[in-house]
Image (cartoon, rainbow over all chains, first blue to last red):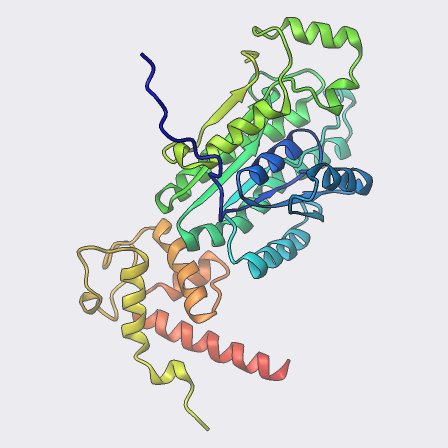
Length: 254
Length: 100
């Protein structure tokens, strides 16, 4: 017989403050919405697409999230945002480093700019936001950092050497920071989404999509909600003894 | 002029109490901490992770920042060094506030 679950807690994050970088579309926006549904005060950043930011706010239908334009890889901009969050809410409990860009190219043709931009936004951005989040988390002796990585960082992908290097760097950063702050009640984990149905994948050619599908043991693409469920689990009390891990949500791809 | 608060209170005792409370040192009482003994390594035997918590606690309690590891090494050399550091930084802070 299955154990009977006595009580579901659907408001696991009441009283918590969560910051999601790159949070107005795709996976980031799904994560923000789930945190809102479960009672967190949610702050999301976006880089520059103001139309999409408005659309995201409309989709929330009155639910209260703060949406800020900020470059997650710019220390001064993020410092200003963290100061504002701490002044207003007095705490930051959860950080999801989701902001990322891709500039795919074969290494032979890859420009320095394509290399540096991808490392700056994905890797340095994660460093900057994590560093800023440490003091408020240490002060409360509780914190959850969740970094979004990629199957590219695990198995490599042609045309994505820069992205794979950056995400592989984030995965190593995750394991190291987890060791630094575990004693203080802060967990640091990464989630590696496989092929998820977002604007980005929808724009791929049909042939590429069908090839991709064939490489996935579960035979279909994931939904942003598959990823947000895992992120919320890692941010919850149930995951309090999990740190330094990279969890793949990829239908068996890796 | 009134003597500044930090010079009137027993800052050494306050710091010892803060260290014990912040790091939950169960088998150490504040008055057992020797003023001149190192806090890290030998002496009290704290590690660099403990330092992270102390940095945040000192910043919140006394509004003085320990911006990097070098300053931290100086400030955490002993409890007396920490007292001198807090006094020095907070008076420098007040002076710059007065000018600003």
